[in-house]
Each structure stands twice: as structure tokens, then as C-alpha cells.
Image 1 (cartoon, rainbow, N blue to C red):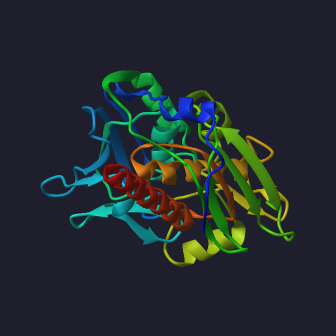
Image 2: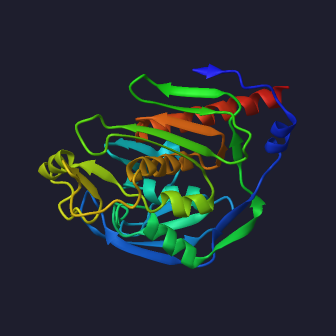
Length: 306
């Protein structure tokens, strides 16, 4: 569904001409951990990259070290996580690290890993933030591409939806409504944030992956998550997190926004607008990115024909 944008104002013209330069890291940094789904030990090394490289995952454990560009066109539908695939190689559970690139505004980086899955760490993006902050973030001599949302795009149904709409704030504003029903301790939560490197570091990055104890049992029955304990993420039982404590009262909904940030980063450009979701997941998030990029292509073609 698309609805015409609100009338153009002087603030809108200013927003359309506000840009920033691309950024990368100053030196290499590494993170070690265990893949949540496959259980492999994995070492990830972040390396600086030239302008317009984007985010590229490199599977050093495979012959010829295949490269997988972090873009929505390379997304592969896999339950419960964002997986990228290209040239017969894949990398799984990239959403938490992609959220860091999007949240900290790191645009160019090579991500070398020796396993098919990113490490889960503590279920949050915090380990990646700490590693990249320690490496240092530097500005590059090229403008970062951006897409300013100019009309409403809404996808999904009454049960689950996501939308992007115009907003003159100059920053992405993200809002999520989580509803797990009444028979558990997650329940109903809503959170909204104006995204910036600072707000991501302190308001989103520490929030962890979560699931109900019955969901965890079902995954283990499938042979998944065999090395994951209740200290590695939030597993909710009848009385709340099992053998763990919340970092925020609304930690679950904050983590859903982390997932949104990571999936939206697959656009390969800054997205400026207001993004709202109700019970959305990785698939709907990716479909919104595809719709936004299709809109941007159409506007470019119209401009060239004008």
C-alpha cells in the first residue's frame, strides 16, 4: 500500500540535501564465540575497507574464500535468523552484527569468519560494538548514499505488519510493538527510538535475543542450540528469565528493534524516515527493504525521464 507523501516544506528540502561521509574502521578487530544454531566455534575478524565496498562477509574456511555482499538481494529465507547466500556460500545469523554497522554508521568493512555462522556471544550486539569501538571509526572521502522515505509503504496484515513513512527528523525513527499474549512473562511491550550511534550503543546494543522455554525445547529437539544455555540469551519460563536477569524492563522489544536495524541495513544506504512495526520479523523487514529500494529505483527513473 502506498499513500502520497505529506506536502513538501522548507524543512523537507533541507533534509533532502543533508548528507554524511562514508565510514570504516581504523584497524582490524576480532570477536570469538559459538554459533547458536550449529554450535561451531567461530572467530570473526573485522577489517577496514575502501569506500563503496559496503559490508562484505568472507568465508575464510572455504576454498577460494568466497565473498558474500550484505545486501537484501542475497538474503535467504531461514527461520528465526537472517542468512545471506551468494556463489554457493552462506553466512547465518548476521542480523546482530548488521545492526551494529547500521547503528554505528560503519558503511565499509570486511567481515572474515571461519565458520558458517556468526557467534551468538551473549545474545546481543554488545560484543561487536565493543570490538569496533576499540578499533576506532574513521570518516572516508566519499558521500554515503541515502534514501529519504517520501511516501507511506505498509506491508503485512492485521496480525503482523511493518511500515515506512516520511519524517523530517533527519534520522531514522524506529518503533516496535511486541505482543506475546497473556500466558507468559514477555507479554505486550512498545518502544520507540531515534537512531544514532549513541542511542544504539546505550539503548539497543545490550538487549538480548529471547524466546520462551517451550520454543527453546523445540529447537533442541531439532538438534539446534545444543551449546546454548540460559546464560547465553533470555529464556522465559513461567516466572520470567531462567537463570538470568533483564538489562531493561522492556528488553525484548528493544531487541526486536535491533533486528529491525540489522535487516534495514541490508539496503546498503542510510534510510531516513519513520519505521513502525507490529509483530514483524525478519521476512517482513526484508520485504520492506525491497519495497523501499524498488521505490527508489522508480523515482530515479522518473527523474531521468523528466
